[in-house]
Length: 150
Image 1 (cartoon, rainbow, N blue to C red):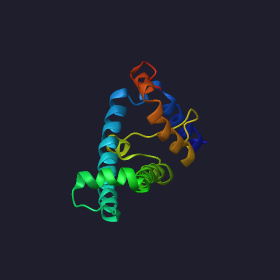
Image 2 (cartoon, rainbow, N blue to C red):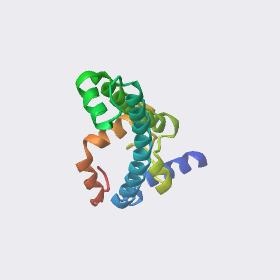
Image 3 (cartoon, rainbow, N blue to C red):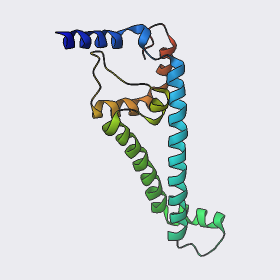
Image 4 (cartoon, rainbow, N blue to C red):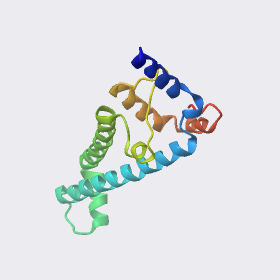
């Protein structure tokens, strides 16, 4: 009985509008996520670009010529480069979703995600939420409202 009562208090606390994260906390978490993701993707793109230049069969050492030659004659290297970067992007978000259901920024700011029933979302739900975040960014501004929900 006591355990059930404690759980009900926990659920009520999670559903309380005053306990929801404000837009500023979410913005800070997004900033840290952006910094971390940028560092990973810049490192990945540096490595894959270096790989592209090494793999190119351009008849010159001039980097501008090599870039133009690859664009005109070895476009598949560009496709491989962007595919690898996109896969790394998806893998980072999949790790967030299926490991802890929190991003780096959420850990720094100490935010958690729960659904309307005060339950943690499944890994797939969290992954979809993270992907929709990039498409529906303007709706983030709704978290600054009174109900603090997007």
